Amino acid sequence: MLLILMAYGCSFRAEAQETSEKPRIELKQSSQGASSFVVVGLNKATLAVLERQGPAGTLDDTFAVYAGAGDIAGRNPMLGETRVEGGVLVFTPRFPLEAGLPYQAILRLEGKLANSSDSQTISKIFTLKRGTTSAARVQHIFPTTDTVPENLLKFYLHFSHPMSRGEAYRHVRLMETSGKSVDDPFLELGEELWDSSGTRFTLLFDPGRIKRGLKPREEIGPALEEGKSYTLIISAKWPDAQGQPLASDFRKTFQVISPDDDQPRTSNWRLSPPKVQTRDPLELRFPESLDHAMLQRVLRVVDSNGASVPGAVHVSQAETHWRFIPQQDWDAGEYVLRIDSALEDLAGNSIRRPFEVDMTRPVTQHEDVLYSEIRFQIASERDPP
Image 1 (cartoon, helix red, strand yellow):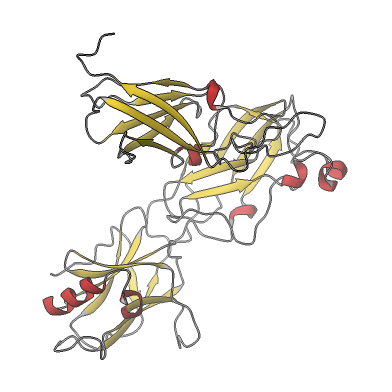
Image 2: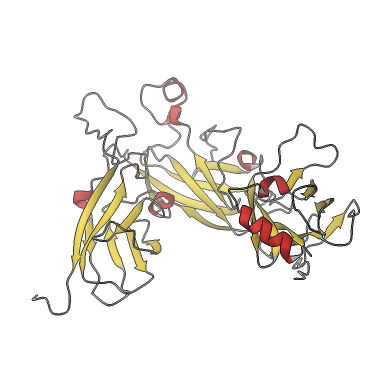
């Protein structure tokens, strides 16, 4: 199967020649900047052997990519997934590629495939050029609410394209409405907190400025103060993974209210079951905003046999409304909504434990409770109301 390199306006430069015409390595990139390395031209026998090896076999040894050119001795390959798909061998990096940095892709078939005309080793180097796609934008900042507690723990920044690493803390600022800059409000980590796509960044407030009694808070004060308004500014100078700046600055203005020291309680949630033989959503409403990223992954619907119900999650209304839409119509019966007790509110209080322990107040900790459950029933059309 022949794959044509689809650059979508992006261009690549090969800095070394392939050792043979077939098979060959290509770099494929979408218009959103997601990249993958592919080996095209492998014969069917080779593909069959590789497919039998599978992700748990030796595919990672067979096809690997290294950041940087030159001798790979002593260097670890990039993290990612190697698989056979659509008649080609594909490597998808776990993290986005960066413009200007060479990447060396190596296919090693020597001695691994008996009776194969593809028994060889080939290598190719690619360098992603700068400034060849549309400018990235800030799409969302969570929490979306304009009112946050004084002990807010984090922001999630969502971008339209993969972003560069090691740049984050130089391009975010927190300002009071008076125009005064807040000094060192965020926890600056050497290993920035990105998701695997490179489009979501977790920006943590310094816990030392949140927790009472800690030295940074005592000496400098809290990063956020009740009764004040602030603006989070994302600079347009922040480069994306291709080295291009953002399309524009992005600002989020919000008001700060009193600290939230209370743990989320499922007894305060309101669940609305769907109707049988429909794909109506299962709806859940919370009395406060909860952690957006966790709401996407820590709630699970289980049927009466203990099997997970497949479907899609939607979170809205300032992260106070959770909806689950099943892939298939609901059957009548009993169900369980299983909630990982690590689920947090905006201040980092989880169902399991509070973020900060106030010794003057009674504390409810459920260290041994991994899950909370809400049971509900979907009645059949014949059941009496």
